[in-house]
Image (cartoon, rainbow, N blue to C red; front, side, top):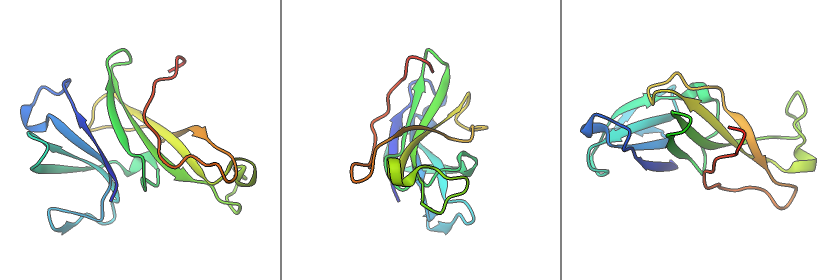
Length: 140
């Protein structure tokens, strides 16, 4: 599991002040199958509750998972990673740009709906993006 934690000062409910976004195999000792990507909440960043699946983003979520609130856009932005393989159809440029890609998804509310994630960054063969700190592009 790989998760990034947000201290969400936009959240009016203090029991949900902290949010962790990323990959899960289980939560609270229970299977969450078939979901594998979600967001959980906490009042203090230590005791977590309320698993929300966000698989509609369609990301691998294997590293570099970050969630943030953008006050200018007035929406949440989630950054994660997807993979591109030589056998992917349609072709995705794996040989030219490497396999690891950074993607972002957005939602007006953390509960969703979340957009299908779009590619925002890629490297090149043997110099791939592994994990990524979130940023804001001037066109977003």
